[in-house]
Image 1 (cartoon, rainbow, N blue to C red):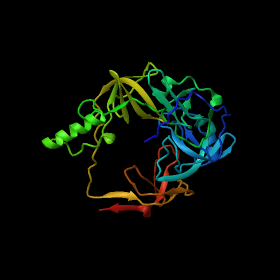
Image 2: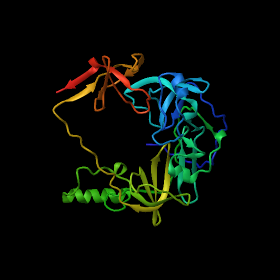
Image 3: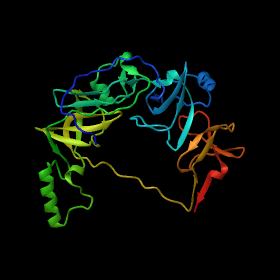
Image 4: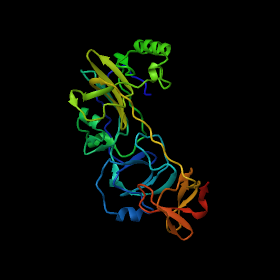
Length: 322
């Protein structure tokens, strides 16, 4: 849960050159891969720079047009490469997506608001999240950098009345009174939660700073009642937004179950190798072997998202659980 900031701030962006900084975290384009060698990264055909399926990487060193990176995780609002695999390799520097250099937190006259983290990806001057892009003017190149230490931004405080949608739109007092009544009647469901943990109301027809935005009506973390309409706080890619619209019931969706067979195969933690047998890194936790393995020498190799070559395990590291 993000704490509130009881003040309004205007857009204020740090003007810095867009450079890759060793030790920071960058965002690799979703159309790009990590290569074993710098030469392979240089020779790879450049792909379109896209934030779809982009991943964060640790920048170890910059070598002109290529960057030495590691997949090991760190604090970031952009998802990393599968964190079971700690690898090092090389990427083409142009495949790094610019990131916002200073966080934004501001509110608008209609009660909506936006908070954007340091490190939010920016493609062609626009934030990748559609909610953020609707409210923020074009971001200049000088307002971005290629590597950051990620830091959260927080929505301005809202003094409006908090509501939930357990049995219609309810305030805390209404929710508690209704729970007492249903407990007395024996109809209180076992999954009902105290007010602060109950499902927030949804927001239908959401707008942000008067601009209609697309998005599901559910999955809000907080909801507020303002006269005959509502406000809802939603987590986004590298930030949060507060949108306005009609309050609606939000179930939050259900989970999926996974059937279990008689046995399963996993790879246990251990060293990882490139197909030529050179060290690639390490596996740091068990992973299920539900991939298409290829046997290369004494190794079992398979694809890992955003890694150009197959990644290999020792055959002895495959474990069958019965």
